[in-house]
Length: 201
Image (cartoon, rainbow, N blue to C red; front, side, top):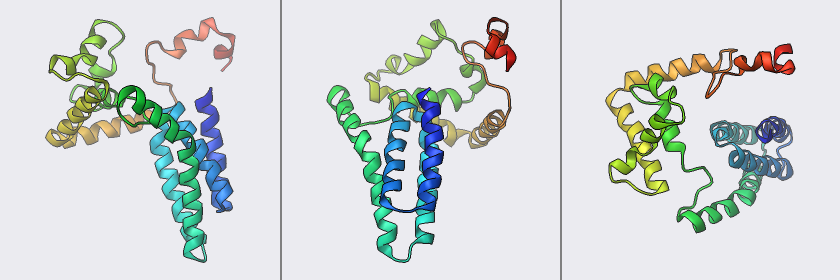
């Protein structure tokens, strides 16, 4: 629910900051952007693109360098306000300053490997535990070390089979623009007979 709220708020605030490149609108966008990433990490690529788009808009609309720098600094300050305390709390508990979760590496590996279709079908149970414990079998222990292990697996895959990686991105792009919700543990469409709301939709 919060993810949907932040997504709608971000689009509205990005448009507002674009039309009114002042520090208040930029600060609000930055603060909500941080809350969105903390709530739903996959929003980070959208925010990076939106931030770059806003910076270009600020530069085109500005009559002086100061009018470019001030809204960008306000955006950064807005982002830092919620993000920095979370990062420091993470450092206090885990030993590493981070605002993104420590399972990004395994998610990146699941979607980017030579057997992507098989790993995407893994469900909770024996095969899932075997996957996430793979770094430990290789002697890699610790949340962030294991996270980096899976990112290295992705980098190795890209280096060894760049064509396969690009084909995988193409397939995922087609799935992204499809109107059908991609199922995870259970398909939403299987629940239609049990829900009047889903049946009506």
